[in-house]
Image (cartoon, rainbow, N blue to C red):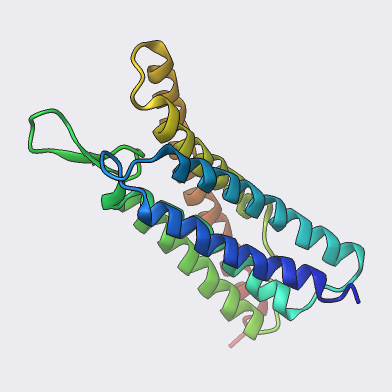
Length: 213
């Protein structure tokens, strides 16, 4: 009876991701900039994060961990994170600086950041596939879990900044702006460091399984 509950929760998180992206796609800064859209998106992302913890906890507690969860759970996590940063770097959050012909994103996320995060995920996924096809374990490392925490906190911080602090004047906007940027740059740093960590693991596994010529 309990066997399929964690998988159902995981699948439900994918549905939440779809709703989350629909809200972000309908939101248009300085256009369809209704705060309700980002408020609901914020709550949905929180629920998705809780479901990410819950499905893993229940699967371990009831000892029903299976192939579906091992494949779909990280897939949904990547969809949520990568999709969020793609939207944050896109046209829905673009603003123009005064009268200058310069545009930027109100989120602080630039396209190159998305490319870096995406490249890291593709690289680690490729390394995991090669290692596991050779019979070697390539489970998630602590740095990978820490990366997910930083990415999620950053996504929530960006939603709060855009919705509540961006148009305010004075110190509160300055501090919120700094906090947003600190979260983004810490996310970039931990993304790079965790990527290097996984590459080292891949090299060590390759050297350990390589037979002498």
